[in-house]
Length: 347
Image 1 (cartoon, one colour):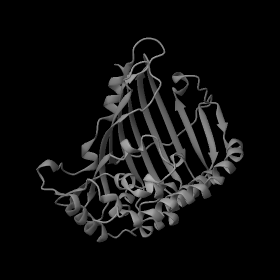
Image 2 (image 1 turned 30 degrees about the horizontal axis):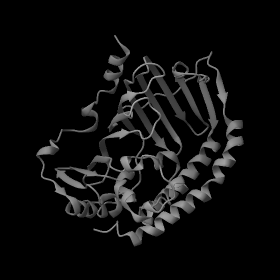
Image 3 (image 1 turned 45 degrees about the vertical axis):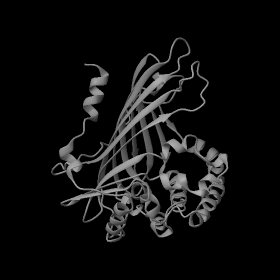
């Protein structure tokens, strides 16, 4: 059996694992625009957003990337694709397990890669198979990083997220109090972030029985704000204007606000690449995320695996990363200070 067939089998959604019955959302009446956003805010404000997050919880991602007109060193441009199946089980704190299977077919090659992460209260472990085949990368079969160093990364992420521009402070301050990466990336946080700025653009609200569905463009209001227009090019992400149009559809438990699934897709055209023709390469990306009942298994290194200790390298480069925090926070502050004046976050 071809590897592509194996991957497609691996990423096939197990609908029964994430829902007790399917809802035909296209047949459910929708509230759109400002009316939909007002309904979503009313629902969100009625939730118990301070409730304790539940563990363990497993998320499954299907990622489909179709590449078009990829330039070649010799000959005409070619198409390609990448399929990824990713499962992550969060156990609380900085304890989690992630397993990712990727097939890449481009540039006349077809490669299969697996990556397995396992974080405990002792260390973060990484194992891979197939990375060496995609180019000149020479990575050991396994890597380790101590838990105290991972904690430094976690705390930096929490501080940055708790100051992210475009969200109400009361919606973000809880991130600074979270206990580790599991809390930070728990899917139930989606409901916490649904403020007026996020919901203003492209909002569609539907509800059916114990479930509700919300579609919105999370980056659109930020992209359209005067604050973003005034940002120096050094602080903007290339192609952000295209990415800002991404719409996300999320399904929640209506009573609790618990996450059930999400879907999104977008097309991205690469700008100003030095290609032989006027046609720029592009990619079509489709994302699906849902809950699963099974847990990712524990990572076990094999006896002959070469395992690299990353602690010394981390200690060498971490001070440079940590030193960038004040500059990032200052940039966040400049953007946030502009939002009330721009008027983009009111209906």
